[in-house]
Length: 619
Image 1 (cartoon, rainbow, N blue to C red):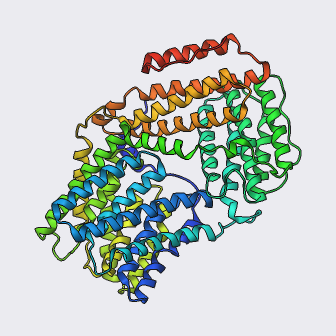
Image 2 (cartoon, one colour):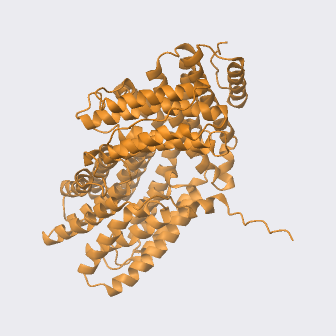
């Protein structure tokens, strides 16, 4: 008797059920417990409850961005969105006090256009754009007796308090060396573990997934080492050591990628060296003797040489910083790339959708407020603030976001309604804010869970601020926001649909092109080669993520990016082949007919798919 076929869920629904896995972030939970609740209590004890509410909201929004990583990287990850949120609060408060409904709606629409374009620059810019719009809606819709500058200072103080906790408190279990660098140390150690994992999988079906995991580990470590003070002249021996250890991992990653490209299994001995290096990084200890792999092929010889150089770098305790660790784009180049992303096809398309959603929801919210649909509730900010989160592609496919937001809001609002009837006021509500603030970092692994935690937190803050219990009205506003975003998300826009995906794919193609040209023309400049290789794999990973999200959309949206996954696969094979060519050129000084033939085939396929201009391939 045949077994029935397994039930296949629609991609958008499966994405809504997906949850990121990993260890419980106890340190982030402790920071969350010490942030929103205590800030609120401080404001209440000082007789400035509205300012305490704003500080708690700022801490909550910062807690959403309090992800695993290094302390140095957290300065940008938490600080830049906090500054944008402060600006949004000032603009929204001043505009709400000075403008009538129509001019205010136009201003918020233009703000949505700008913030949407900026969000296309990268993850930090996306978080900054989100906070800018959320706080602008709060400032415009939640008018009070306090001045705009007092509200701005309270918001900045709330976010700054969480950032201070992030920088000052040690991570539990970080006892090796200087605890300030535990996030950086763990990120670098994960790179060596990922190299060992790729070597174990070489020649097997899991090699492609392990190579992607290595790219993710390298991206994470590179970001962890990119924060303030981790610059060309590192300010301590610990920082110099971490830079040197990260740099030593790059030739190992290159050799492991070349071995995976060849597709021939290697002995288990090959992965022992990177694992011992990972343990040395985590424990801040010496490496001891490293087992050497056999040297029967160019990639194995490259792996052995890289292990020897890594052992030397570890023994020198990082007395020097490799050129790649210090390599930074100039300010002009960074600004140019940011402007290109914001005003490119992806930035324009996303900006228009954000502007339409944010402006339409602000207009509807004000109209409902004027019609007294809100009843006893004085403020109308919930509807536009909700659309800001719903319109973000970072959180998954559109239908998945809507489902998660609706389910999370209904659950959270009903839960709060029950708790509000039982908890003493205001003490019980302060405890609820503290508990929810602690759960925010853990709940970020699923959008529905995050919504279910944030909803009672915000409702408690609003209630402490003087409004009556608002669970049912918030459910209605959330469902209305879902409808607005669904409609706008399916509207035709000027230009080509799927512009964000295609923009990232173009960036990946350009990076792959630059990497290939450098390997063929200047194979001896390894530092620049490794930097270009990192850029090629990073942009490919970003394009892959965008393509996966687009493919999980409803068919009406997913069809606009059909075929882009095939282009990404070819680009990935091209970058892998270029890496194998680089290793072979280091060993022999020339390419084999197999290498040049495969390069030509891949370039021809790219030209057929996208009309991409191919560089000449030297024989």
